[in-house]
Amino acid sequence: MKKPTPEDAIKRAIKCRQASQLTEAMAILLDLHKSHPDHSTLNYELACTYDGQGMEETAVGFYERAIVCGLEGADLRGCLLGLGSSYRCLEQYSDSVRTLQKGLAMFPDAEEFKIFLALSLYNLGENREAVSILLTHIAEHTKHAETKAFRRAILQYANQPDPPYDH
Image (tube, rainbow, N blue to C red; front, side):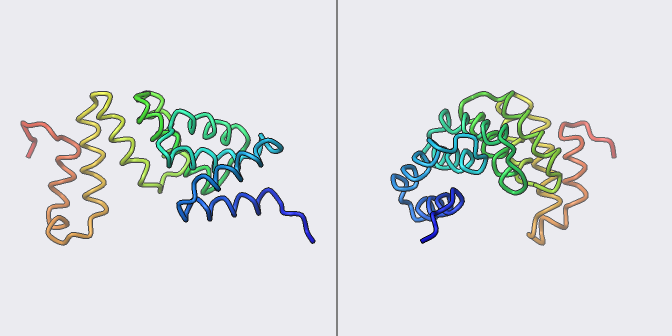
């Protein structure tokens, strides 16, 4: 019988996590981590599992390690978002903004970064920029017909949210 690979164990742990079997998922991942501490996907999945349990402080180290170990593609995208979000939850707003901006630069079509970036900017008191990002997102992505009718005005307010307005 073929010996399971680390990837097989990670897939099993993900299925457990998706089924809310967090203790089982964590046991699989932590056991595997003993022999594969530099496995990027493993570190990412550990971060996700800790993060999903509200243990952001622990998750941050695994997110960071996953990046250092060469995480790529969609997992890197998720990792940067999770890391930025975790920093925000830990009130490390500047780290959150830096991480989310990096994610947006690497994945320019990843609109989710903008939403979390706006939250972190709000936490830093950068309310005008936060509102601008959210208004732009609404104008560009709404499916609501009545809101679409005001797209031009919303984009103007995104660029200049404070009166007086240039007409």
